[in-house]
Length: 107
Image (cartoon, rainbow, N blue to C red; front, side, top):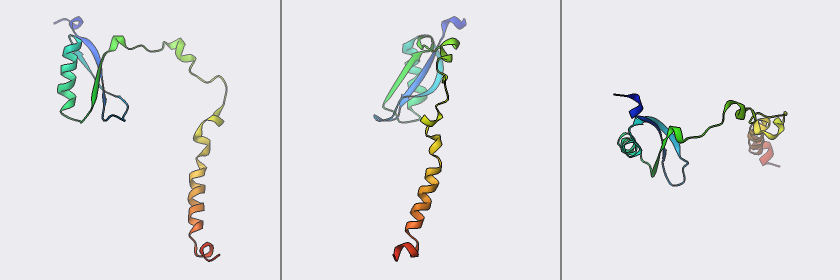
């Protein structure tokens, strides 16, 4: 059997109407119809879902190495990221606990 007979497909599923599609697994199939049958057989009996996408891997486009370079930040703008606000959760917890002390309730 020749490897050129089979094509690689990626299977995505959606658990409910509000959920995003998520990649589940890859499979080998001779054509898109058989890939869909295989995806249903292997996936639908295991988990609930409302929709499935079966996509030929060769139809998926991605950025090349040079194009990915564009995605890196040109300057340091870490102030735009939320990681700088991590201390607020602790500060808020301390504030909430302070609100329920005997001293603060008797004011």
